Image 1 (cartoon, rainbow, N blue to C red):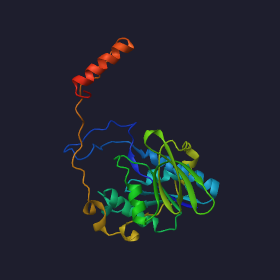
Image 2 (cartoon, rainbow, N blue to C red):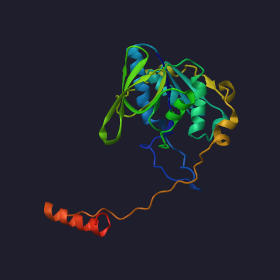
Image 3 (cartoon, one colour):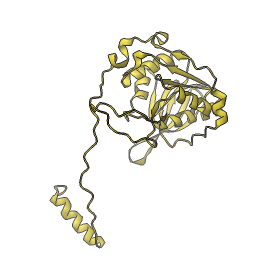
Image 4 (cartoon, rainbow, N blue to C red):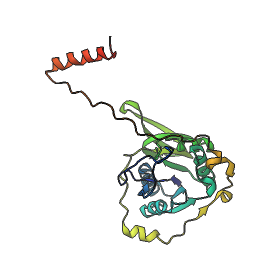
Length: 262
């Protein structure tokens, strides 16, 4: 099975104090520490496990001038190949622009399965679904279980509202967005990092991908970020004390006073 995993380089929230940049349209990026997107790490691990069980190959792909480090990190984890998609025309792409770039990369080879993380640093969770739509492939989001079936199908479990689990059969080729917790990503050791340090990673630009510069980047973006802000801190929670009956009575009185119940 040929598997493509889309990965992204994002600010590491555990290593950075995130603050809003002047102008309010972005975060301050000076001196930020970056790492691979957490959800993408689970997607790569799942791809490797599928390839180990069913046979096949895993390729990781990323968009951006500075993405080589995360591609090499996922190759050190066990992915067989890496691909970088980089062009000045890609800068400022919205979700659809990014999906358009990834679609062009996916069509450079014959893949049976494409995995993405369920979401990345902007929290929109949209690229996987957009990529599937552009390819006209079946799609499932928030996937936390994958089983190979006989024939050209996978059985996938999805985390849905209320803690319920939805199980479906999906035809290959397909796109799946992977939820954290589906597996335990393996440790990347120094030996693995050294092994891939000198491996040549192909870089594909807009021309090589056959992507029009007008369809991607800031020029093609249909969605533009206009504001970041830190919400004002409201009043703290009110702690209700007393016996169970006293707490219940006070809570009902508060809800009536606030208009929550009549």
